[in-house]
Length: 339
Length: 272
Image (cartoon, rainbow over all chains, first blue to last red; front, side, top):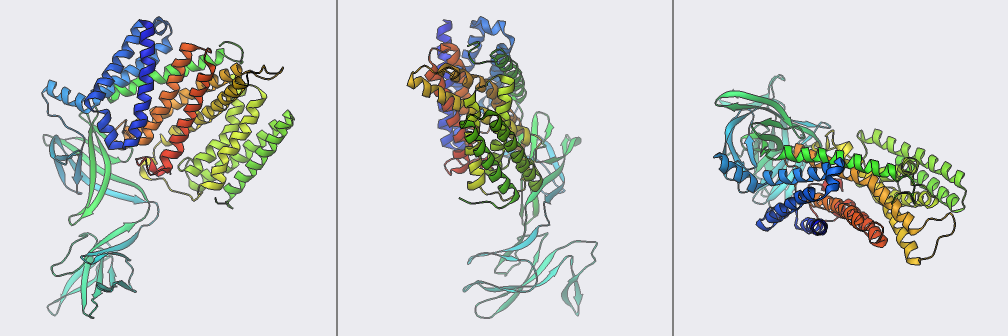
């Protein structure tokens, strides 16, 4: 029986190794689906049972505590993986009678809050049961970023520097463009009943540009572009112009607050590698973007089911490996000694 | 192929030259001079590594140039430590270290670009250094183990009795086993630290990314080796040696093919 279990275990390791190589050729998304499929779920359960059987069957694992720790660590990792899998989470939610919240994304603008996230798999809305408010969102660059103007129309897409001055030929059909004026704080005031643009006081910020497009037939059109209303196209303007920052990002940080039943329950500045943990969920800084409503932050909400078991397994396995193999090397000091 | 004229590049070439001299001295059986060359090469290599750290302002393990620089620089000290503390001690080991160092430094010296890169947000983690460092150490030990396994296979295939002072194929097989015993806990720690980091940065402790799956395949290969060797002991030395060599093949695929090939697109591609 023991021999049978050992040979089966050896074969199972070889099969898992081959499955890993096969999965690597599938790409992350397909591999996730493959390893979470029903036949593979049966395989994981069988592998875990085999490990538990081997712990029960082999006396050496009871006598040598480090060997036991290593195998018990593997069992914990597998159990954590099974419990934290999509099927494991679904089953737990149905047993506890709670709604199952899959990994999902929150799109938040500064000063807004939302309890509705969108499922990572199909984009369907989900109610989190708590709401997340974004107080502030900041992007930090290594060096001062350069601003470029992204110009889009039916005729194509171009990117030009945002500095005042030179003419840029877009194409023979689209014509030319020139940055006529740049403003750090654009203010509009009326002169003789007409709106006039001017530079406002430096204490406020409203970056803007005045562009002049010249069509191939020589007709000139002026267009204002605002950083705070990026992508905003005025009626009749043929071009959509979006200012964009170009530079190496050092970090992006969301200052968030979590509310449950209207009461603040958690707050943190979330950044990459530093999520917020609340009520069995980790909330991560995922990405950011900009649309006609301004800049927004994308947060990822992920349930943490099974994670503690997995990390506990890592601890047991690491202790077992270091002590066991350290002892092994120490006792084998010289080649030709103990085999 | 590109020649580097930066300070780090010149120090890499200096180290390669000293290592080549050490190899020649080793072949000529001038042991003391060979050890002196190894120590000098360590110093030159360490200078290049520290200079790189200062230049890029983070631990130099971000891209392929830095990874091969780290592997090349730390192979000799790891080899010396393995001989000193683990008792894996015989002349071919020293010569093997020189050859492996030259092989590892060549891509850093002539293949990969040394243009400094800033760390993207995901890599700015306290786990970045430990995760990559333990992997590098384990890779160095596994490379040395594969060399021993290769020698074991070679002597086994010749089936000639070694002359006095020379090691038998069984001794080489045992050396390979001891080196894998040293490298495997580090390889495991690299995998676990990466998993913890993945949970902190990307939201999942296992992302089924091609690099993660190849790393798992490496780990499983060595796991298979330990269980196989426990079952058959040294009754099947050739099979034991083949397992260790296959483990290194998997490591090379994980390190090079997965990062450089478009076939395996994933979250770890920033390392290319």
